[in-house]
Amino acid sequence: MTTNDDRTAPRVLVVMGDQWRRALLRGALREAGYDAVGARGMREARVVQPALADRGPVRLLVVDQDTLIGANLADLEALRKRHADPGVILLARTTIPPPAGPWTRVLRRPVSVADLVSAVEAFLPLPPELHHAIDAR
Image 1 (cartoon, rainbow, N blue to C red):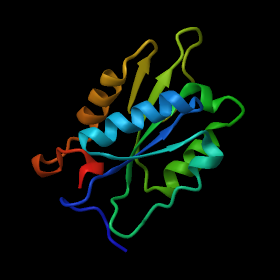
Image 2: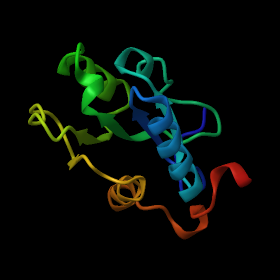
Image 3: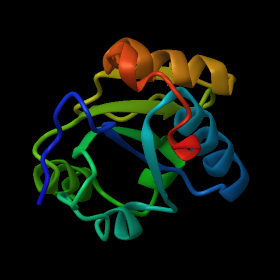
C-alpha cells in the first residue's frame, strides 16, 4: 500500500450529519486539492480505511459537534488512534459550549465553507503541485 508523500493528496475526513453541508464541504476541499471523504457520524467514520493504495492517509478530521451527540469522546479517540492521530477541527454550535477534546482548532457557527477550507489549508498546507481539483486528474 502507498503511504502519503509529496505526490498524494492528504485525506480529510469530514464527519457531519447533514448530507448537503457535508457534500458541499467535501466538494470545496476536493476542488482545493484535498482527498476529502465524508461520514455521517462516528460509526460510519470508523469504516474509512487508514491506508489505501494510491491515496494518502487521513491527516485531518473535521467534526461537526452535532455528530458527538450520542457518541462519546472515546469513539473520537478510537477514530484518531485508527488514523495515526490526525488533527481535529471542531465545528462548534453557538448555543452550547464545545466539549473538552483534542481540538486542533474550534470554529463556531455560523461559518462559511470558505472559512472551513481556509482552516484546513492553514493546518494542512498543500505543496504547489497539489493545488488543483482532485477530481480533474
